[in-house]
Image (cartoon, rainbow, N blue to C red; front, side):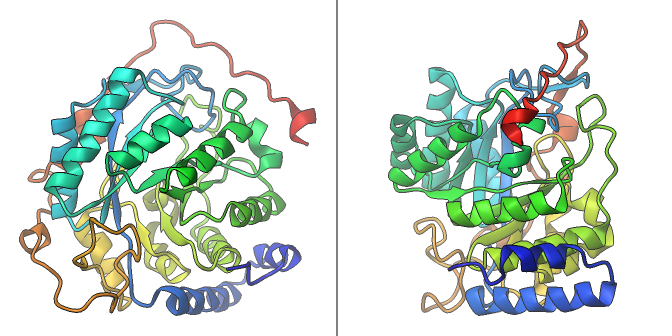
Length: 379
């Protein structure tokens, strides 16, 4: 579906500051979300399957070897560990589960563990399977699909014109090649970015329209949670009303993508998280994030059900990557799953928990300086 507003209209909406006017924009986005998705939701959960020691220079990430921040570390999980985290995600009410690793590629041994983890999750849960493991060749994409992965996440991070201010070691074109390989292998593409990386309002609109050209099935919106010791570590959090406004603008530009809010939502949105849902979200990243804590799954479910949205599973949940729990798609009642015996407390559930499962390692020497962006190329 093409954008519902023009570039100039989006830029004008980006200048709104009056809360009543932003509220009107939110209602417009809510109508678009309701027309395209009804009361359906698409709730995700993740596991940080391998962390730390990344060779890239992404300015927002504490895992980068260029960051002065202490490094959150753990080696590649075994497939059985991945399955245990998936079972906990299913018990907490997630519809899909994403295996995430650092860096732009995995060793052969670690890639095999991801494949076996996907097979186990497919065989022992009703979850839809996703992966976020850096750049992919056509061959690796096909092997992921054969193992039961249905969707691959690979962000563009920001507008092309601002990209070199964010990273110089990971090329924008390489990201597009991975997205192409994912689709050629028959999987869905999950492609989004991060707001508040020093981009201008025009560059936010630019990113949204670039994403519309990519036309991803799923679009995660992340909000910078500044990490001390990273290039963007001294930036302030976004104003919650600004976040809500931009979610609504993105919804009008990408009316039929599955939107979710992920990293930084708790810190940036605070009490406006429910309004952000109304601005056009299909779901959130339930539980915790890669290296930071999130919200309790019960609170996330309630945030959606309070708006009349359906967080229950459908019988095809694991087998069919679409229609993403769209109500009325199948006849019959929702099957009994671990959602009936919810595990919501962090002390009880084996949900991924970076506060206890990451080992934070102090750098023994001063890290190398971040490379200087090629601003002529990025202009």
